Image (cartoon, rainbow over all chains, first blue to last red):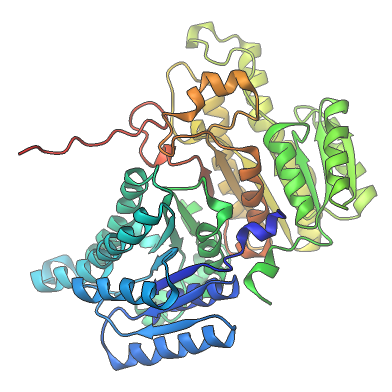
Length: 258
Length: 268
């Protein structure tokens, strides 16, 4: 088989949770471009997210792949179970799960209420636990599967006022490593994609912070979401069969900086 | 352009060091399969000639050049020959390296010469090749460098001083390439786990990989797609990073490399 064909996802069925996050949306489109049928789910039941998910599903159909959009609360157990069941009902199987929750939250620790802390951890970390657990019921049974959890450079580096978000993002990556070992012999791989700074994220609403980043990033610019989704395709494909428990960082060299 | 089209390396030229066997050969052939012309270099003529045949079987051109990467004059000659043949170098894979004399020696038993050769083979060679190629890449405004490190560059082992130091040095050398030459040049690393290259003695030494979390050793052909991925436009924003391809070994690895302990479950 030619080497490039090993990256093809033709005939595979995927679910992306977090289609309203630009990274989740780009990942869903890239999976479809690589040949997969892709269901996309929201992370909250907000009408704005539902509109984005629907437009993402349309984009998947336009690529001649099967797709569907589903409005769920990704931190709700039965909603997440339902999204996996729906994928299996639509496509007959589940080969690929991509988790791309991304609730931004920046507050000094002393001002964070317990309810807020739980909301951030639930949205960014517990949602990934729920989705991995639900997907594993299918994947362990069929003895094959690919789970890709999208996290952030803030999993690896701290940032003032980011304690809750940083803790959740780091939690996703170390849960990824533990699950990879737990399922290493089952045919299911679990990996992370560590995304660099992209546009249109909550933290960069601050123009000053955005300018600082563009000044100090080695590329002198933020990433486009499409520049990150190539790693999702690679990890989801047969080309990465021996790769598990790892994080592929696509961050323009930001983490190389002293 | 679809996402898979970005993997296409048609019209690109790649130098692969240590291309005479094992992972180097697998990467050279995979790059050729994706469309690149190849400069295959190593110290042994016979082996790179075989690699060249495999590359030509893929319908690509191949220049086989004998080169000792620890000799900067030899490296310069190899790069000059590559540019004379292909007029451009888009991809440099610094793969040459491996265990050298004194590997596993206790610290007090390492001779000055063993240390010098080990560092030269596993670190200095990549510096020489990068130094020779980068001015050309800068001039063209683009280039991909892929350095092959090891789990021993990230973690340590008892009485493994030469190899761990060189491979760890290679990682931070690569990060400095990133900080200096981004965004024109992307420099990333591959850290392969245990790959026996079809050698039965190595299969046996590593017990068939039964202590690797996935329960098996790596196949050389599994490294090819990763090399193509890093050489391609899919990774244009990726820089200074390491991809570990090891069947889960380093995801745990608090006990001997790749050994995956399972936390005992509580019993009623």
